[in-house]
Length: 109
Length: 114
Image (cartoon, rainbow over all chains, first blue to last red; front, side, top):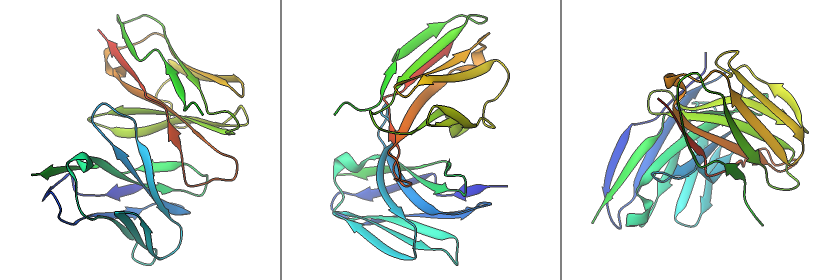
């Protein structure tokens, strides 16, 4: 089967750093993506890792370890607008995205 | 550029009625995906097309669901007959040729079946 595990909820303070972990077990693997979704909105692409290591895009970074079937999204200098759900997604061998159940991030003042 | 366009944004219907959801992908994108999102099941891929051809429909829950893509700029997802358990947000997404990592999602259609 195919499964992705990520925490259901994370709470952090404005200005802090938060890490959202994702472990996966899939039949094929091309890469790990992260999407952000605000309440009532559509998922929007944040980052993608195909190779091991850290990818940085502004305040957001994403890490992948293929040998550990593990990745994380790191959000720095948290802002209130970062309160949203964050989904990890594995691209399998047929170019489909398999989404995790999402992590709801609440940023407090 | 306009993003992915979906219509209607909200649909309320009664059990047994036919529902048709519409999607216009971003111009030039060659992949189109239909997803369903519920609290219980999360974001599920229903079907996807490449160059207007259905590639994988293994996520379509039942024969009551069907999808078509008659041309590169239009796709429909039809539910006939609809049931209350079909209530969900349905998203359409598209992807550029050769771009394997990014899908662009439309705003979604919130379907309520009474």
